[in-house]
Amino acid sequence: MMPDPRTAPVYIGSEIYRKSTYGPKHPLAIPRVSICTDLIAAMGWLDPERALEAPMATEAQILRFHDRAYLDALQRAEESQSVSEADRAQYRIGAEGNPVYREIYRRPATSAGGVMLATRLTANGGVVHVPGGGTHHGRPDRASGFCYLNDPVLGILQWLDQGLTRVVYLDIDAHHGDGVQDAFAEDARVLTISIHEAGRWPHTGLVHDRAGGQARNLPVPQGLNDTEHRVLMEEAVLPVIANFRPQAIFLLSGADSLEEDPLARLSLSNNAYWAVVRMVRGLAPRLVVVGGGGYNPYTVGRCWAGIWATLNDIAIPDRTTPAAETVLRSLVYNRAAGRNPPEHWFTTLRDAPREGPVRDAIYRLVAQTLSEVPV
Image (cartoon, rainbow, N blue to C red; front, side, top):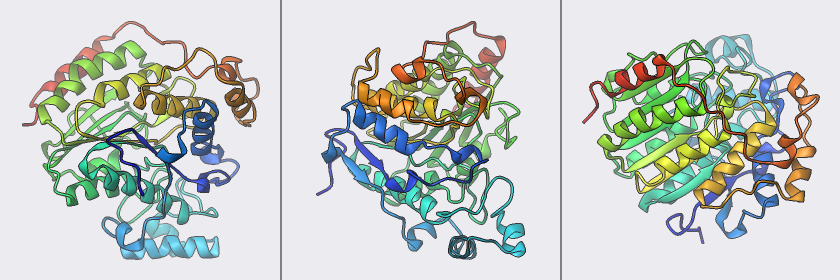
């Protein structure tokens, strides 16, 4: 019998992520979901009755958004562990940061299956955390930005198929959620909101890009601090969400906006992420929280584990348990930051807050976001 996410949050993970890697030199050579799961368990926060294994999405489910020919190409790539020149050119498999790797089909199909399970479980309400989800750049007919399938789109489509008519997609990843915005650009039932670093790949999500009216983009300057993020949430994002009166919120919590992430230049602490979770969890009867980007295993694991604690109203202690410290000390991170990691990456989950001045650019974003608020 499936747990009811209305009585307590449900956690969806998978062992497929534990030894799966995009390759030794790829930013996704690091463990992420497995570290998050292990930390939650080591902190004593994971009730086995509230934890589920993500199923692989079926072909029929994936074809709700993705093209048959592209799906065939992904399956060929996994079976042969190679890609033809024609498939590389047409589907961007084996190109532009989307490598051929051992689970190139099974892993994204599992991410999609976990997210789709979450939106099925929340048909009548509740909260589900799926850190393996969040592949927000995937296109119907090609890979993009390390993403082969677009699990947020597939999950939201299930909500729409259930009859929901007001869904908010909130993306706080450092990279614009272009694949999700474009998928619902002409669908008035879905409001997409993205807070992302200005000028960062994929170079979309400009402030005036409203995608048919159902999008709000907040491209932020480098060095965004916790105070600025809170101002954007409280003065711009929350009013827009409240005005939309959502029946469900889909939160993508890509951890690459944290200061220590190697692929962005923002300066948030994980306190900002946990604050967003607290802010939005009561705004709709359904909440699904997924992962996304994040390329420092210490900061990603600590952030996402803290999200689970926040969803469960668990007070995060000043120090990790000995078991959680062991999990963190076992990590190997081959970038410069991993050669001499600071001690607090092992002994705490909570970052020091990164408060700071609020720049004029932030207040301009607030005003621009509130203009032409959707009704």
